[in-house]
Length: 388
Image (cartoon, rainbow, N blue to C red; front, side, top):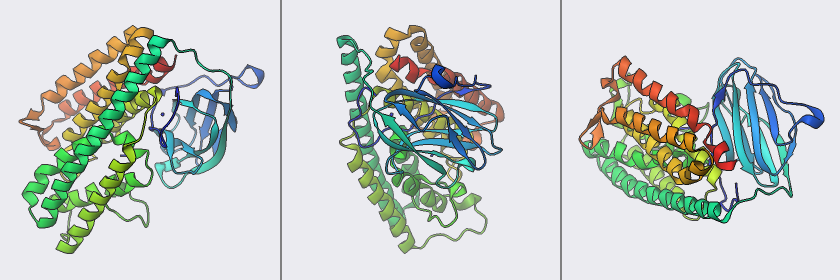
């Protein structure tokens, strides 16, 4: 679990850009591009090369000089709304973040150890007269991509709400077999739009927190709390939830799902948000699904894996006509690698679903991991190609 030509939404998608080793240091002084910023994340500091930048396409070159995996966030002025993020930046690694940011007040945050609120600072994006020139033909492609993606998110959210209602009804009534069958089906719709859901900083941890990621004092609710109760076999000394507790957790999950569905109805998405969301969904595969950590109790990780790939592919296909005009080789490469990854996933299908993740041998897991990595590199260049 665990973005513009114009932004008309209250929230934008988090995103992750590609990983680069030994990045060249940013120029300083008059030679420095004011929209190219460096970020040094250490154990106790989050140092940016500047506290402001002009509106437009910003690139944050995030380097981890500490000894723990870190994250970097660009947050809205309320310090809650996630505008952009880069996760899983290992020690000694640099990763580049690209976002088209409008003028306004923001907050930056580094999270050494990927815990807590992070080390925060105010950041300002100033007004700029430098507007990109967009042809009428390209503007038509942009508007079509925006409309299609917004409709896709609304549809998936609606299906998520419907299936969640069926799931919690079965769970609350004690029909565990029906609940276990519905669990991965309902979560498919969540995983397809996971980066949208993650941008709501309050809802995501309530709905999708894993037990291993809980912080001290954090109440555990949502999908995975119920998952553990339905598949307790791997939990030593587990005490099943009472009927009253079941109803409490089920009602909470349904209420949060209704809130999510209400919030996405009026959202619109910029083309860089769509591209970054595509990259972010594949990162979800790399950090949770291919490792088998996401569905620790149910072992339904391949359902999530497929759903994340579905969402990433839809995001790419939405902006593909734009990329095909600007970088046809990249568009072709991405299409091929999406297909290669899908072929591997199809080998694990059984009827309407997938084999248990435990059924995969190490060689099959490595195959999937290699295919994800092969897709990740060109996908990390998607946003820059869209904005070029």
